[in-house]
Length: 118
Length: 109
View (spheres, each protein chain N blue to C red):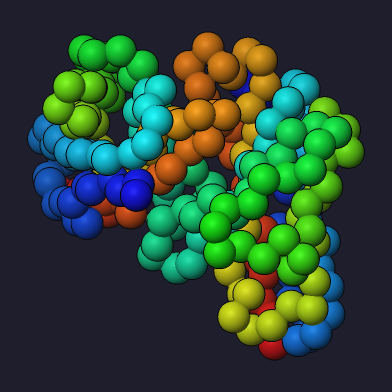
């Protein structure tokens, strides 16, 4: 099956710093990538949708200047949390879909990145 | 608005059958997916229904009724490892996926 990786798997940072999270599709071309945030025991909340080579589409209430998304290639998308604060501490998960996944709309999820802001 | 409703918790015993229901109200609908998530892990895809009816994949089956905006996930021959959270998710335009709040399944011996 299709594999999506994320790096780092966890990160601890000081308040006010920026953190970059990478999402890679390892064995397929991801035409669309999604970024989610999940707080403990809650659902996945879609933050933004990114298509390769174009600007990301952010969900209502998500600050585009705080959560910078770049989808520079068909295998890589990055999420940068700028000036992180403790309330940004969460589990960030990316997913990807390619042309093959569109047969059943399957999204392939990365393992997630746990961000803790002190 | 967009909303998905599913029970918050279900408890069942090993070997039993459990059904997790999902009703939805969304603007735009292409299909209903189900995902499993163990604590600390990422969601894994279980099934997708684009058309009305039942889809079967091993011990798991999923059903959709578009006219009723309703679907369910059926898990048979429950095993302890099935203890996890199960999310229904609606696929809307642009492959955007809206997730339900999740159902925590506890399987007891």
